[in-house]
Length: 436
Ligand SMILES: Cc1cc2nc3c(=O)[nH]c(=O)nc-3n(C[C@H](O)[C@H](O)[C@H](O)COP(=O)(O)OP(=O)(O)OC[C@H]3O[C@@H](n4cnc5c(N)ncnc54)[C@H](O)[C@@H]3O)c2cc1C
Image (spheres, protein in one colour):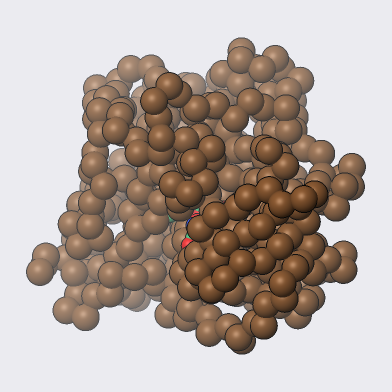
């Protein structure tokens, strides 16, 4: 065993300690419902909640425990930007559409904040702000250059933080300054999922775990859905399987690039150390193309540190020492602090680096959040439910995007290793290119 792992280290999410995987009441399934939802992560549960509150009979299936996918594995960081910058988006889609898409991310952030407040979901919501560390000197200039347009056009409130002042935000000299983005937030991902799940069940949604959907076929004006325990008819179907979309849903799978994101939680830090390393408890990310993201645990005792540390998919026992090593490059004081939990999950990337929502062959879907789904998934889950209901409020800035694929791509990203290697070289030696 690696010596950075504590003797009783767990290879599962730290978040499951405070919010264990739910044991759900056995749902009796009728032969026909209004809506079947495939996947019970944030997207699926959010859609089920909205539909059930509108009086629709809805069943959400998950192949594993409800929330077993990314929704209880993530870093719990809520941002207000997209993977591509405003300039790059404007170049491809025109400025009005670019601005509308970025504003939609703030709408998603606000939707989640309001939902948590309105529903009184106990999930350690913290409007902590974000520090984005400049990995190279030129990155600081780039952040500063794009900031006025973000402020003026997209309403993003942020300030540049020169290197000499960065210790007010983060106790490291590893960055060349950075950017403080004000209204970013953090939450406990699994408590948040549990809160939404409880509300969906209370509203009348049936959630069926350990029951994969294996086929969806047209039947009359609706659909016949085959699942592990039988068949069910539905007027509408919502696919919410994101980075876990199976080969059975080939048309969606070939549009999604599943990429493993790896993450660790440390043992509790020695007294006083967190106040030096993360004095404001901000969520933190950096300008690397192969980005690292980290934060304090909600109780302020541990660091939860994530990123991608291998070109090919790896094992949490292998990724833990590598993530620990990167973390100690930023915070050398953590060399003797061991890792208590190490885990991973499959994030859903897309070929245009943007989320997608819509209807294909009569089947509704929302997916492809490119690593920003803590806010986008509940928001677009709600939006897709509104579309099922035929409400105009389901409209959003991502509606008109073509959901791209590539010739011969069927859902196994054979190109990932070389892409990650190239991006890592650019991070090390400089160079331009999109973040993966
Ligand atoms: C390590 C990690 C860190 C992350 N950090 C952040 C972060 O800090 N901030 C952020 O915004 N985003 C982050 N993300 C991304 C975010 O967690 C996801 O975008 C979000 O949870 C997606 O929710 P979802 O409901 O669409 O998908 P998921 O939560 O992945 O749920 C999909 C579900 O579909 C189920 N499923 C698959 N096939 C079937 C089938 N055939 N039948 C029934 N069910 C099926 C799966 O079992 C799974 O539970 C992170 C992701 C990971 C992995």
